[in-house]
Amino acid sequence: MTLPAGYIEYFKTWEEKIGAFIEFAPEKGRSASKTASPLSGLPFAVKDNIAVKDFSLSCGSKLLADFTSPYTASAVQKLEEAGAVVIGKTNLDEFGMGSSTDNSGIKRTNNPWDTSRVAGGSSGGSAAAVAAGLAPFALGSDTGGSVRQPASFCGIVGLKPTWGAVSRYGLVAYASSLDTIGILSGSVKLCRTVFNCIKGADPLDQTSRTPTDRPAPPNNVIGVLSPSAIARAIADDFSGEAAKAAVLEPEVEAAFETAKENLKKLSYKLLEVEISELKYGVPAYYTIAAAEASANLARFDGIRYGKRPDWAENPDELIDKSRDMGLGSEVKLRILLGTFVLRSGFQDRYYLRAQRIRDGIRRGFEEHLGGFSENTGSAKCAAILMPVFPTRAFGRGGESALRSFAQKAADLYTCCANLAGLPALAFPTAVAGGLPTGVQLLGRPFAEETLLSIVEKYEAAHPFPHPKGFKAFWAQT
Ligand code: GLN
Image 1 (tube, rainbow, N blue to C red):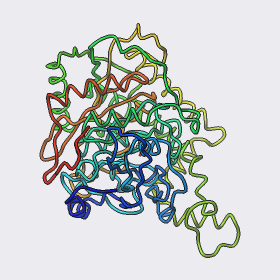
Image 2 (cartoon, rainbow, N blue to C red):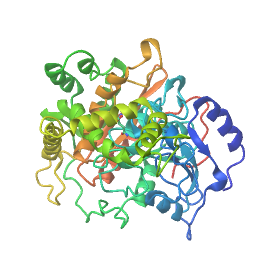
Image 3 (cartoon, rainbow, N blue to C red):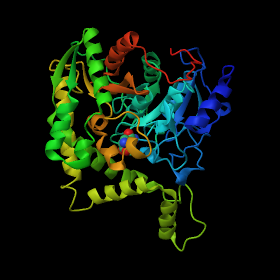
Image 4 (tube, helix red, strand yellow):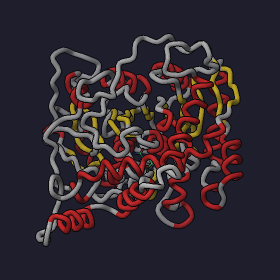
């Protein structure tokens, strides 16, 4: 594709600092567009766990470092048919497992706002690329927050659609009942254009749906889940790091308050709401995600895919050795945790209990937002406001680092949307100490447009920030 003058030099300077891409190959990108569309000629980046024919599909894993995709994901194909062109594949935590992109087996990605800090994860490469202006938008995947958290760390928009709104065909499965393909972009308008392009039922993914037209939610009330009330509830049941990790750092709390004030000025009414099961969201999420991951990752055995050892005595040893050399420690941990919670005789204690909590969380949201049915009569709120993550982008050592366990406990605010299957849109609301931070709005199933239109108004009144050195090569249309 033809890239704007000066772009390649700009790309090189940034990419050397941030390391967003696993493969950058704009010459390979193809557009299948027949007619002009708002996406015609627009380049985009794709997280390296989403298939694009002839591009890398490493999933951030050493095991698949040399794997090239033989086919293209439906979401990418739809974008290509609208005229957009893939320029490369972006870095991620191995198989999407993590919140920093530091669990990548391939390389490190830095935050464009402060290169000593992480870009967030697991879609850290996609977020860093968009925030630095290397692509106007990117695709990511969100299983427990992996689009919204890096978007918030990098000061851009991140949409996690309703589960089933976008085909997962071509997304390498982590936890299928939670996985979604999401969008990272510099503006709400572009996010909407991309979402409208990729959404809808796909015969290649039987869980994808095109909902019938649903009436807009009935009011201009936004529910607010108070982070301090949630943190207090958690402290009742958990102690130590797990309780501490849920508490917002002061800068993030201030940004949350700013968002509330600004929404009020846009004439939304705010209503404090509560969902009592939320405090068990993280244990339920990690139980279900690990259980599904242990089944989904069984296919990576060195026989059908990936690197294998030069020599093995028998097939069992071949699988053992391949997985041992190819998979990183976080992935191994999750597989072990998954097989543990699914052990016969223990399912009641862990997996089924987690599913009951998941049901409770979904019902809690439904009570405020209305459910999957067309009838919105009971809905009290058009959307629910929540923090994205308790901290801004963290560092890699000393004071500013966040231990792996605390990173998991801090997924509390993001993983609930995945457990409930709901759409959620993260957007920047402040820059504090040189680092951006954001909030998110959750909606009822298939109410993406409700969220986009609220945040579009917000953006018009409070334009989103850019890191130093940012240059816009494309209009955010
Ligand atoms: N941090 C979460 C995890 O490690 C979320 C990951 C994701 O959404 N892919 O599982």
